Image (cartoon, rainbow, N blue to C red):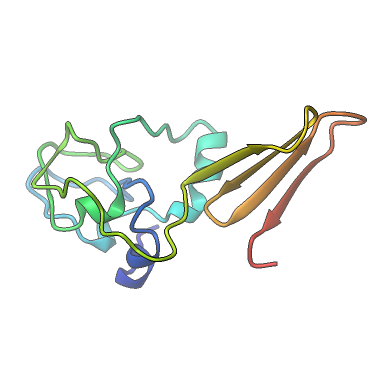
Length: 133
């Protein structure tokens, strides 16, 4: 599902992933990008893997695809040209994934607006809480 210009601005520091198949030579705009809000589910299902050299949305807007990319392909330093070296800084930059050990048995993650809490002691309780709550 492609995103809008407004969504791209909100997610400027999130990984850039193709929403559909695009041919080499395509100049990237928001409509070419997958919605980062669904990345956790795509990663959990094995449909998406984000390598370390994946560029951010802010870096790829206006850049050009060097090769044809299929849907759910990360935009990387290897398949893009003319990308920005750094994304624009924003006041409320959110880390893509914030992981913090609360104790030996509780782990929390914040991924694209969802807080996930995993409690390993007891019955192995697992909670997901939208950040907007």
